[in-house]
Length: 194
Image (cartoon, rainbow, N blue to C red; front, side, top):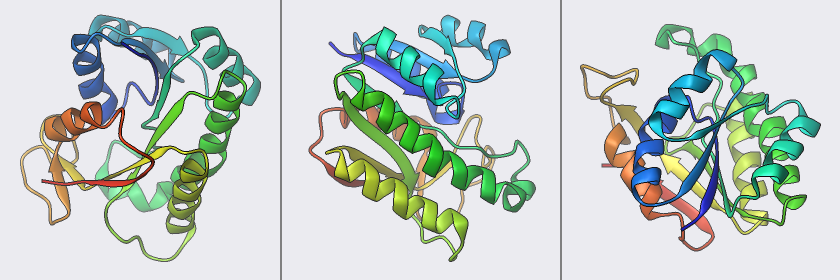
């Protein structure tokens, strides 16, 4: 079984992934930047790691201490209110560029574990977010990693709890199950949709 460092553990998909990973026999370090979320991660079965992805040295130290076989980058910087997503484009772009690069640097300095990182399965309008997605995808593929290209989430805890969004879409539990199935997938872009 693998040691998995899950960045973005307290996010929507992270909270669905932890129990599945633990049930499959993996040891999970659940990374969050919020100390208040550590107990919740522990209750789900992860070893909480409180570190900000933008604190490069602290991230490298945390990843090196855990010695993962796999780094699962599920980080986004999105608001709780779906109507404010546009206000977060630059923040989300930064987490996909600088944040992802810090994860890659941490991986390189801790034995080069396998990297899987999330992006979106739809075409974003040209702008910082679209450029950030392309940069994340190319940098993960350059490391021999896997890009998890998710459809819009729906189901418990998502923006679409009570409705089904337009395609491409994927039910959150199905997205988490597919992610666990893909831990050993060959390098490439995998589209995860219903």
